[in-house]
Amino acid sequence: MDSIRPATFQIPAAVRELGWAALLLFFVLLSVHEWFSPPGWFGLLAILIFATQGALILTRWPARQNFGWANRTTLLRSILVVSLVAWAPFLPAADSSALWIYGVACLIALILDGVDGKVARATNSNSEFGARFDMELDALFIFGLCVATMAIGKAGPWVLMLALMRYAFLAASHFLTWLNQPLPDSFRRKTVCVWQVVTLMIAILPPTPTGFAGTTLAMALALLGWSFALDVRWLYQRRHYHEN
Image 1: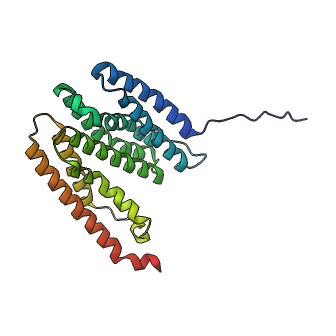
Image 2: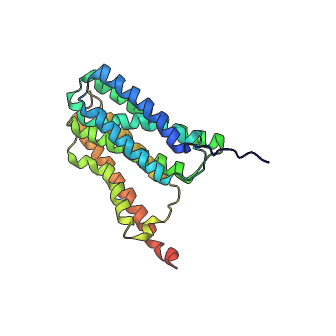
Image 3: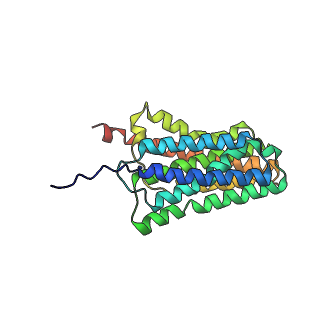
């Protein structure tokens, strides 16, 4: 008679990866508290942002699929991005050296943005989930940079439009379904995005004058609005092809 093997419980891949990431985030937050002594709200905010990210990952992760090294790379970058976003509101209390370290950390996060794509191509692990994960993390990073720039007084609340314009586009797509159609790859769109991130990072640095920061950020906002307008126009002109 064949023996009956007891069922074994397997932790879902995404839950396991998020667990390791949460542990690493814990040590990062401890290090930041030890070196820079930010307010206690910093750690709580970082945990809240990471928990929200984790919940979104679990709701969208395909069942019974290997997490893959590309997504692990993006998840590792998210630890740095989450820490930077959580620290952004408390930068007014930071000294000049802390702002320089914050700027360097932002540069590292920007450099790592291209690593997960290379890993995905090298391991043949490209996926729709991975592309969306990377895109949403970029949007969160930009939002954190906007908050940081506003917090240290280099720009007014209007700078948040650099981050909120994309979320406004997503909100509109729930009512105008033709906005959900895929857009072709665009060098223009990538260039505007890089200009947006670089100007925000330069604005954070202590030597950057407020006037210079405001001017370059206003240019970035104008370019971003122009880029979104072109994309919306392109989608609008082709809306009937998707409706039929």
